[in-house]
Length: 166
Image 1: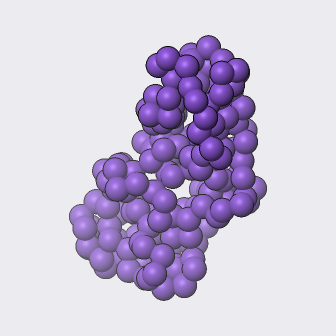
Image 2 (image 1 turned 45 degrees about the vertical axis):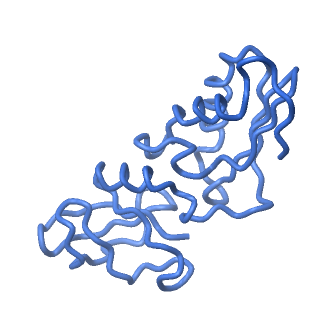
């Protein structure tokens, strides 16, 4: 998407700052910006266009994300069009460093970089977000959503969710 000329006070930085306030409905400690969902922003005199990358095919949160983005950007006073694109795949490498920190602080293990293991690596050691130990085991490959697994730390004996590397 191409960013076009904007009116006074309306630019891509202002739109991105507003989008940074839109939480992911499944992991609210992360914004759509933290997750790397924002693919493009178009600003025209009569509309704002936002193109997002879905994390997974069939993600049940897409309508909620679309509505939250439209609601937040409505304050700019022009119509907002939110679309999803599959032209570029979303990968877990798009999660920002701040997003990874927020995941850890909230008890989620952030995904490993994609170069480690298979495309969706379930057997690599995942550091425990609670104690930091790498003595963790996979309890269930299917967490509460498609993008998460359930793991168990043998050091501190705590279960935790881990974000899949995709």
